[in-house]
Image 1: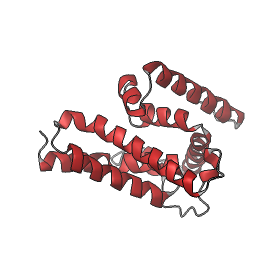
Image 2: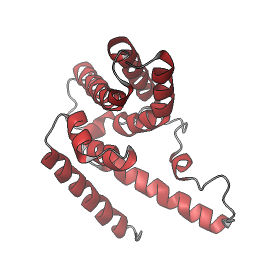
Image 3: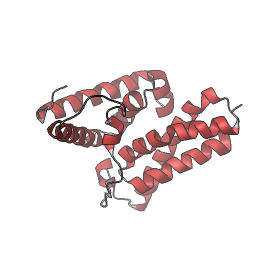
Length: 188
């Protein structure tokens, strides 16, 4: 049984990553915030009495379901949408900062030149753009495995598919990202 403190600490710990993941999925910061808040509320209301070790998997599954619900609502509202690129937000306000995730450690002794910093920022923008271009299931699997650092079994459970499907989605995502980034002259 998770205590109120354990539940609160868990939610504080996953808040930023869940928001960034949701922004990647729905491409709308306000909708992403709503999705994360709904997911947190559902976890607290329905599963707050579960052991702390079960909270990460439950939350990932709830977050995935809330995201799917959002897409279903969008599809219902806009009955003509046929693919995820149609969901792109027209008003990007710039609140989401991918660089924050990849920032160098705060206590780093290395000093980065302005040229290196600019080059790194450009590369990160290119990577972010290519991640957004991935098909939804590939993007979801890729982000869970490599952003959330979930293992194959956890990702499969959260996505509601087999472990083989997760591996296939991740492999295709990595291949697509590698090909797209190499085409832009970005080498690993």
